[in-house]
Image (cartoon, rainbow, N blue to C red; front, side, top):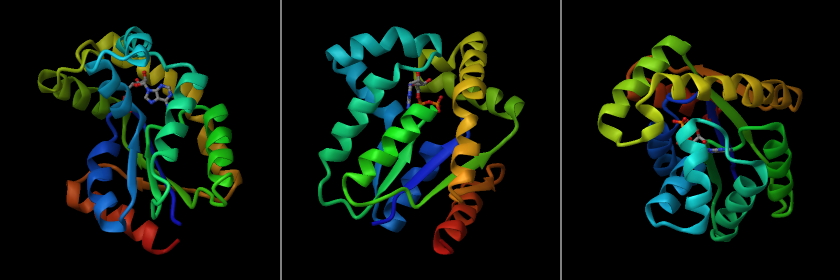
Length: 190
Ligand SMILES: Nc1ncnc2c1ncn2[C@@H]1O[C@H](COP(=O)(O)OP(=O)(O)O)[C@@H](O)[C@H]1O
């Protein structure tokens, strides 16, 4: 089983790259952002709880997010491997993921970060907000709040995975195909 955590700041291109990587490596793509948006669209209890938090640009509490992620993993018992996108975003979530995979007699193979400059990313998100319909992409203050959440809660994962010898980073600036190529080079050499 190969399990990859795709890591990076909001707007780094995780979702775009995941679409290519999941096909290439036959992985189940689990995006917590997509699952939250699906629940919001369908008006589920989870969606109602998460909406206001997400619209502010805050992180949804760990317990809610981890339960949701665990359910999604459990729904794919025959997966060849998983591509995690947007999870984990806190140390508690990273520890939970290690446990979820250990319970399946598996583990995180590698965490691969897409790196890009904050200012470029903020501009990308504002551009995306014009067409995506995502409230959290339409207001610069909310976007800045997401970067603050990233810096406080998510950036410490770099040390967490580096200590496990699992952290890899690629340049996230370039064409979509070039970046897929860079990510594939890392995966092929694991
Ligand atoms: N692992 C997570 N933990 C807490 N909140 C999450 C998580 N994944 C997604 N969210 C919530 O959903 C929002 C959108 O997530 P995502 O689509 O991955 O966005 P981005 O484009 O900011 O990377 C986040 O800003 C956060 O509020």
